[in-house]
Image 1: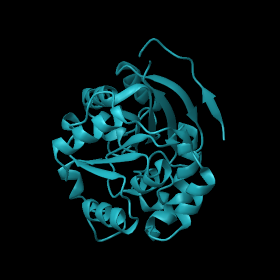
Image 2: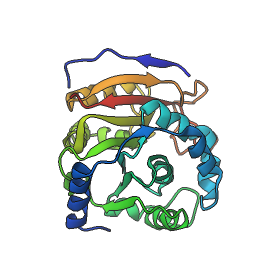
Image 3: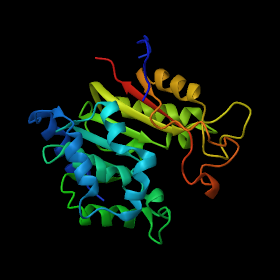
Length: 265
């Protein structure tokens, strides 16, 4: 794995009451943080209660290595932004452990979409995974990003996986608004993990659900974050950038960039 450290720049269905109480509780009674136990997390990924379709994705998505690179620690309060069917929600729940909290955020519209390679909706898949995995530290947030109901500076870590392109393509301001909301709920020094499909200049990246890495970095910094490091963990130089990431010929193995982003203290 290549990790490139980047210079710091000057750019810097639940109720609202439940969400606010959880946020305040985290602020008043924060749990001690501990380094990610990679061996224990690997064992949990192979353990009972996990969806087989998610296991099949692991060699490509490399969840343990990704979360280790991003600096996730057990005991953190984290948000899985657009959790969809809950692939990363499950992993994050096991990673942060019983002292941590995972907010699985989805829009009501997104919950109605079909889950990948199943006959369920994303909402049904997420509910199934929470129940089957006994994910008692997961709080569903079925609300848009603009109306999360979370307290300012109440979250340690936000994962934005394979969704920034949908916010950015066609309307970069929408991506900026989303990242500014993330900035608001994130604690000073908090981490954002960005994963997305690599696009190429001159191609129809919007149609192919891809984006230029430089566009991602530009809007991230405009929102007040610092891009701290990048990794080639999810790189695939054999990707065909002219194909949609949903093209069966790619088998969901697109070239992806991975960024560790931090809110300045």
